[in-house]
Amino acid sequence: MDPRAIVDPLALSRQIQSSYHNRSLGLVNDHEVRLSIMTEAFAWHLHPYSDEAFLAVEGGLIIEFGDRSVELAPGEILIVPKGVLHRTRPVGARSVNLTFEKADAATVFGDTPPATDG
Image 1: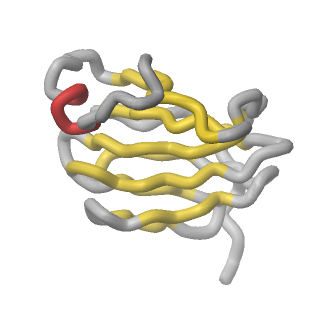
Image 2: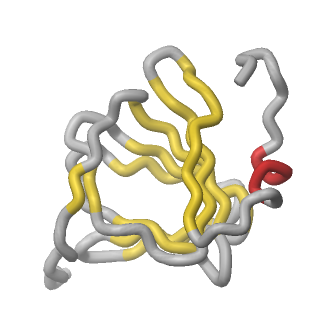
Image 3: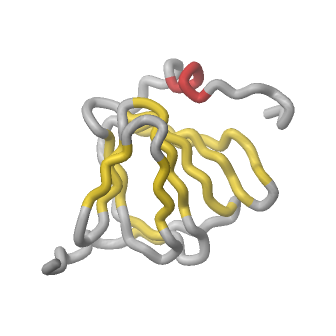
């Protein structure tokens, strides 16, 4: 993709009909901007060496942790620190969001964390 090209994430998302789609939109220094479209939950995972930022674009996004869930409305952003086990799922039928993380970020899949007493 031409780094000088205008990218419209919502227009791109309308072309995707699969239940999960994640693709790179480009690099910013050593970080990657990704478009994620989902209709179902993604697996529990963590990134051992990279924080991950989520920006909800359409439909909202729930980010689950072992002890709580956070719901992002379109336009809201949340940063998950490196090493924190989490999973994402759509609010409603479909979510469109942008993620930002190191381009070479490793993903380690894990089990559902035990709930903690607050």
